[in-house]
Length: 220
Image: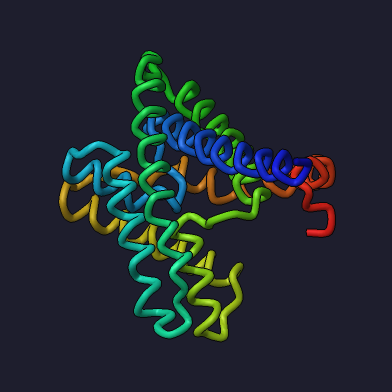
């Protein structure tokens, strides 16, 4: 019973973390100063095609999940397919959060936009901290990078930097070519790239130990 309760805490942190992450992304979209590197490709799909950001997120995430198959080949495990339903849930969260944030009036000046960009990094960091701490199924972008660590000589942090830079370049190039504007990329993207990781470190230093205890991951 005690183990089930602690696993329930992990599930709660996992899905709550994802929900908070999508809220942070929605706030960054509202700032119109650019989204985080991780969200830049889905948002570019939205900017270019006009489809819902949640649907764009699902399309991108499922594609990343399926790319793990040719990367891992015989090392691929069926459990990795669980990333697909998780992607759908994540996309649904995104749609709901964007609709919720759209109830807020559009920012009228640069100072307000900048404030929203900063706030979005804090929200995303809280979400990432909870989601990662639960140590369950990785979202497809992280899952794809984990797969690459198994077949290349690169470690996860190095691949994460390469991935972020690549997604920003792809997003920026696509927006400039198709809509002749920066689109999903802006100063908010830089702010997110600089702050989110450090904010997660601060949260981990302060709250990781008690959270792990609550989830039954004391030795993790």
